[in-house]
Image 1 (tube, one colour):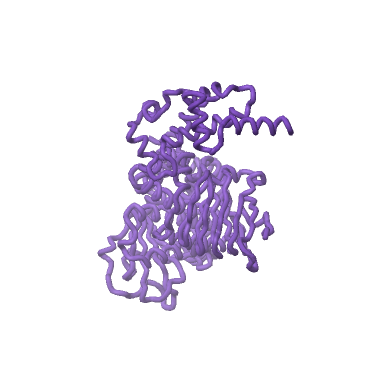
Image 2 (cartoon, rainbow over the protein chains, first blue to last red):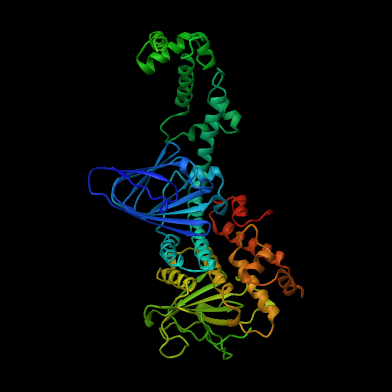
Length: 302
Length: 249
C-alpha cells in the first residue's frame, strides 16, 4: 500500500510502500530549528524511496543523521546496504539517492544538518555512511535529551532558544561522527579511497592490455599487496573487478553493428576476438556471435 | 558585575562575600573539560531548576564536602543542578570577570535543556565518559550557557559599568554563535539591539577587538575538537569549516 506523503512533515519528499497487508499507521512531526530540521516518524514496516527530484531547496547540501529509537532499518545508498538497529544511527548524504527498508514497526528521528556545519569532506561522509553508529555513549544519551527538548523550543517567539538547541544537537552529532571516524577512518577511509581510485583508473584504461594490479598500484603509489588488501572482504576481488568492467565495456560496444568483434576486443582490453568470445560464453553461456546476431536481428525487426 | 534581584527570567543571588560554589554540599559532581563542573545533590530529590555560577576557576571537586547535604539557598527552594562555568570558557576577559550566580526561571527553555543534559550526564558513572568526550560535552554546555546569558535582558544585569556589561554580552553572543561565518561586530550588535559603534566603543579601552575575540574563541573551540577526537579522525579542514576559520594552522 502506498502511504500518503505529507510535505509539511518530512525533510526530503519520500515515496513509502508498506510491507504486507497489516493495518497501516504513520505518526510524523517536523521541527524547524533555524538551519537544522528534525523529523520524528513512527510507522509500520515499509520501503521508502527519496524523491530527489522534489528535494527542497538547500536539502541537497545537507547530511541527515538518523537515529533508530525502536525497530530497525536498512539504508541503501551508493550500492550499499547499511543495517541500523535499535539505539543506533547512520549518517548519509541527503543529496544522493537513498532508500530505506523498515522490516518492523519503528520509531526514528532524522536530523537534517547543512554539510558545512558538519565540516566532513565528501570522501569522509561517504565512508562514514557505510557503517551504523552507536548512540549508546554519553553523547548518544545527550542527543536523545536534546531531541526531546527540541520539541519544546518551537513555541518560542525568539530565535535564541531555537538556535541554541539546534547548535547543541549539531555539536553532539559531530561528536558522535568524529568518534566513529576515529574508529574507522584510518582503515576504512584509506581502503575505500583506494578502491574508488582503482576503479577510476581501471575505467580510464580498460583498453590498455598492461592494465593489472601492478600498474594500478604504481599509479596509486601503493604496494600491490596494499592494493589487494583494500579489496579484502569486498564482494569482488581486484582481478574480478577488472574483468567485469572489461566485459561490461565489451557488451556495450558489441551492440554497435559497425564495430568488428576484433575491434571491440581491443577497445575493451581483451587479448583477441577469440579471448572475448571465450569470456562471453563463460559469463552468459551463449556464443558471442549468436547473441550478437540475435541482438542485431531484433534491432532490424524493430 | 554585581548580581541582581529577581527578574522575569529568573533571579540572581546576592553575593555575601562567600564563594557561591563552596557553599554547595553535594555528592554527585562531574567535571567536563577545563571549564565546566556539574554538581547535583541526589538526596534532595529530582532537581527541577538550575543554578548557574560563573567564576574565574573551577573549585577543586575533591575539596567539596562528600556527604549529601543541601544547597546554600532559601528554605523551600526546589532541588537544583549547579553548573559552574569559568569566565575563560565563556570568552570573558579576566579583567571583566566578577563571579556571579544566577537562577534562571525553571520554564526557560535553554535553562531546562542545560538542566536535563546535566542530569543525564551525572547519572552516569564516572568511568563511562572519557576525557575527550567530557571536553566536548563541556564545550557544548558552555555554548548553551552563553546563549542563555546572551538572551538575558539588560535590566537583569545591573552593572555600574555599561561598557563592561556590553563586553560581557558581546562575549556571550560570540561564544554562542562561533560557527556562524558572518559573525562580527555588526551581526552581534543587531542581535543585542545596540549600535555597531557602541560595540566597538565598548572594546576600545584596550585588550582585544571583537574580531580578535571571535578568532580567539573559534581557535579555542577548534582546538577542543582536534584534541578530543581520536588521532586521524578529524581533518583540520573539516574543523576549520565547522568553525568558520579561514586559516587554521
